Amino acid sequence: MRIGMIGLGRMGSAMAARLMECGHDVTVWNRTAARAEFLVAAGATLAATPMALVAAVDVVVVIMFDALALQAVFHGENTILAAPLAGKLIIEMSTVRPEVEQALSEAVALRGGLFLECPVGGTTGPARQGKLLGLAGGSDEAFAQAKPVLDQLCRRVEHIGPAGAGAAMKLAINLPLAVFWQAFGEACALVRHLGIAPDRLVELFNDTSGAARGLQNRADAVAAALAGGDGGDATFDLDGIVKDLRTMLAEARFRGFDLPVAATALGVYDRAARAGHGAKDTSWVPTIWAKAADAPQKPTRLTLDLAQLIAQTGLLKGRELNLAPLTVAVLDAGGHLVSFQREDNSGILRFDIAFGKAWGALGMGFGSRELFERAKSNPAFIGAIAAASGGRVVPVPGGVLIKSHDGAVLGAVGVSGDTSDMDEACILAGIEAAGFIPQTGA
Image 1 (tube, rainbow, N blue to C red):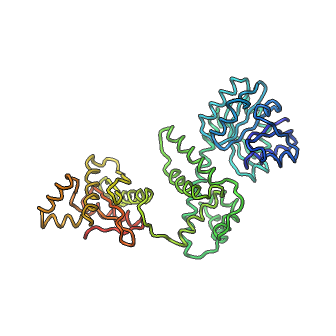
Image 2: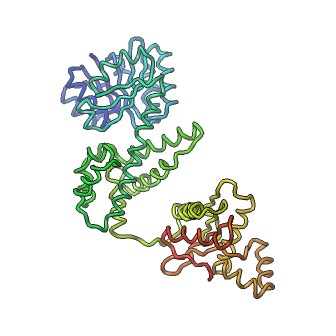
């Protein structure tokens, strides 16, 4: 069969090589032609443009990094949609949002072609061996025509539904694996102090119900990375999982809900990628937490992540104590609001009270418990402060300064909802969880 492969990243190159081994006449195209050299040396034909590739083959397989790259090969001069598509089958295998696949399906149909989306589960090893998991979306006719090709690339091919269904399923199956690497890294950090050899640690985790198949497949590489190595060649790199997680979050927002666990994992991966580790395999992520456990750092500034941790922990403490709904406001040293979180059914004035407690602590340089004590003995002084602050200061417990370990004031937290003493207890838990020193004024 004459098959074209557009997109020669890790996965595209592996699949092209697999199709050549299966005896197909393969034509390839890639934006960077140098990536096709080893395939051409093995017998593939290099097309000058996507349009020229379409003209030379019966089936076109496309796998690109993201939706923007897909648009570039489908739309415009010398692209797929610029070619006559009557009698052609397009199999699109990128990981993108369902709406992207639906739009491409409609565009291909208008040109007279058949379109099937089939993103795949698996990495370069399974791709090279024909052991991927295919998740197809499209018409029954397109699926029937594509299945002989897909059966040579996949150990299993599922027809999920119409165009877009495969994309939705691919995002879903990638999410647990992405979250697993983050969770596994945190789990390793919890036992780093025990000094267990990385290979033994990985083997032990692999014998538990919490292990993912990804850990089993990458056991040696993960153990090597935890021992200080680089984890070997990437099969699914950080840049790719960052893109996929962003796509998952966009799809969830489109459908009217959030993915809080995925959003947290994205924050970790995104920071690692921006720090220069985007080309590393996702299974390398656990080393971030291993290094943190080896050399724990005391925080020296109030970041957004830490401010959110303070607020979230405070709310969780309130639930643990079965308190009334709480509201938490975290301010930086300049009095700017960094994080604000409230429980459902928290009163509409609770933000102003929480903010006022934190504002008063910052303004006076001590926790609002001290302001409360001074109000009892010197009401005129507190009245003057209230006037000077425009009524923003709330002189009751629940406003706590955030200090670094060297004594610098980094901000303040105010909480309101239950009794002042219980409010304060909740926010002390949040500040301590973030690694800071709280000052209540007591």
